[in-house]
Amino acid sequence: MALAQKLLVDIHTHVYLPRYAALLRARSAVPRILSAPAGERLLILDHEPSGGRPVGPQYWDREEKIGFMDRHGIDVSVVSSANPWLDFLQPDDAQRLATELNDDLEAYCAQSPSLSGGMKRLYGFGLLPLVPGVPIPALLESVDQISKLPHLKGVILGTRGIGAGLDDPSLSPLWGALSSANLVAFLHPHYGVGDAWGPRDNGHVLPLALGFPFETTAAATRLILSGALDAHPTLKILLAHAGGALPQLSSRLASCIDHDPVVASRLAHDARWYLGKLHFDAVAYGPEELGFVSDVVARSAQFGDKKTAGFGYTVDRKLGSRNMLFGTDHPFFPPLSNTDKWRSVVENLQAIDAVSGWGDAEKDGVRGGNALALFGLA
Ligand code: URA
Ligand code: ZN
Image (cartoon, rainbow, N blue to C red):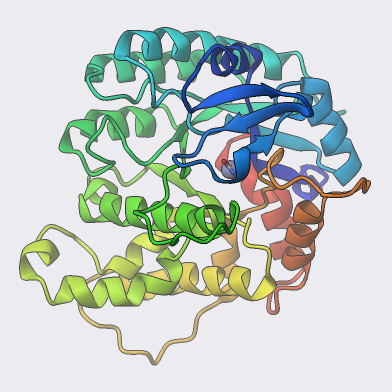
């Protein structure tokens, strides 16, 4: 077990399974994979900038994933389908593909190599047919399927739910089913928020650096405001990209709620308390950001009720690190030149190592131990 605590575990790493890549190739509208003279291109975002992004076997080939892991010393990956999942499909197609892709992902993981103690190198997050018009029982059937697939440990969720967002009251049975099945819900962006980017071509920088995390911020906030975390206290939510701006805005959120008695009356706790219930990937690229998120997580304990705690407390940054988990976002953000290691990975590892106030135990936890505990792998 002590050895397992030293493993490097990547919980934010994506795949387009071959069946899904074939679907994208067959489409003539975004999302699609387009054949171009210099190789295939991935077009998935609305108003996709700069002719999309290059796409190749690193997106679908398991050997490429393992090779990438080996190059970066990653022992175990918990792999998720990349955006936009099944969002653009009709309910029947979404249900059929969710079932097939969950079976595909189970095989992808089950056939991966094992570590010496028997743990697999690959585990996965399943897909739900989260599209407008899908009956709630179909979502629950999907949860049931995933819970019976031994290498799938959670689900990946976009922010739209079945069309009305994650604060849609009709999703309550889904939160209940995920909690009962002990599956981790990985909340990941795709759409961004609005169109604040102006006419200048800044490539993918604004949608990915700002739009993605703002979208996660809004979706997680709506989930908190819906009371879902009060109604389902064992629900495990993992937020992409270190929770976006939610940690930075959580006191402002608490204050705005305080000034709105109708909204305040729906919640059992101060908004800051809920941050301690959430998990955050460590895909933030900087030690200051990671340290700050761990402070905010640790601080949540001060806000268990709605009485203002005042600010005469100290936070234990070490405690907050337990809700944080290493990730890479592979195969996105590849190096632009032919380097052995990916800067996006190295930077996230260096950031973990450089957080002031975290000791070896906390760093080991964020690198892997926390993931083993959250996903029940060790
Ligand atoms: N770009 C995407 O489209 N998805 C990711 O997960 C990361 C970058
Ligand atoms: Zn991602």
